[in-house]
Image 1 (cartoon, rainbow, N blue to C red):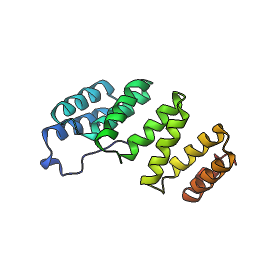
Image 2 (cartoon, rainbow, N blue to C red):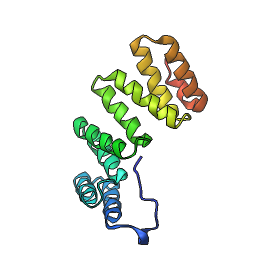
Image 3 (cartoon, rainbow, N blue to C red):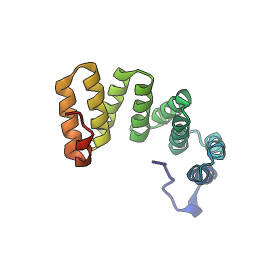
Length: 156
């Protein structure tokens, strides 16, 4: 998922214009150009959560997890309810072995968007790994109820 501006193209701020340029570059696979545009956008508007989130997704795909984590944490500092950043930060933290923090992040996502099947599903795996089988089963069942296509992937 890539975050996009919400206003009409002609009403964009200079920072949002750079965000759109970054989006175009990112969609075309030009990650260096996208990151440069996002960086320039953030110089003009350091509160541009979409630029931080999108930078994080690029870093994450490149395996630059420390950079992704920084970008997501900055986005969350600006908007604590930014569920895409919370969700992706949970994935990064899981990759780095910080399962307890990742579980907390998924719980935050679920508190904000209770119908987020992916958060329930991923939390289920973390609960299973931690030994909380009952909690894991409950999380997987909720995820499957919200998105039946997950049934074939659940270990229950």
